[in-house]
Image (cartoon, rainbow, N blue to C red; front, side):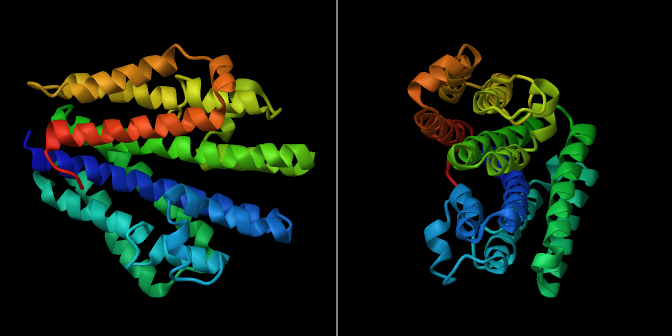
Length: 312
């Protein structure tokens, strides 16, 4: 398919996945800040900024990290590129470019989210109603994926859409695990109760708390958490699951000389598929995740180079 259309589909899906992930991070961090001791609240509220890479930029607009400032900056700020408002606006703009490749259900889901979000921005979001707004964002994301799965042809348009979703998901899982694992491990050394909340926050940030309990029971163990989020092939947001799908999708859309992205993805998938917790522990979780993030970003860049011919 045309490179411009492939790029729009890829980024449309990335932006929508990013919006959902940011809503999750905000929701968990605001809830954790309520139960933390005062000196730890700023650390909790910093997590969404660290995950989105906007920590320094935040202080160019706000003097201190407060729940309301965080909501304003990461949710509704139309001048801030990394706000949910702009993620959904960009997703809608990209969807408009490829309207002919989308079903009516998929287009309406995205367009309705954008129209409703503009109303929300005018009305404002406060700490008291933020949680319901985060739920709404997650629901719109689920509706988009449901409409896509239920109504789109399984052609290149669908494959590039899925690539955008899963590339973004893998990146987010690695970032959140890297940042929150450090916080949870630190809490484990200081206070058992706080440690439980931190591990719960990590799993909830990635929609994996129930999956963890079904797999490992109610005892929260650092090794088991890392194993689930990295090596499990059953968890939709695990690195294993994401790379398995990315490698499979690239096999389906490969054409001509566009093979490098496929080779890169297959190599990283093999690394995870045949890896184990002993290797991760020996290398160190942080170093392992830093390397993964660098490689997944190179894969994303190579996909754009191989199939889209430009960078966004």
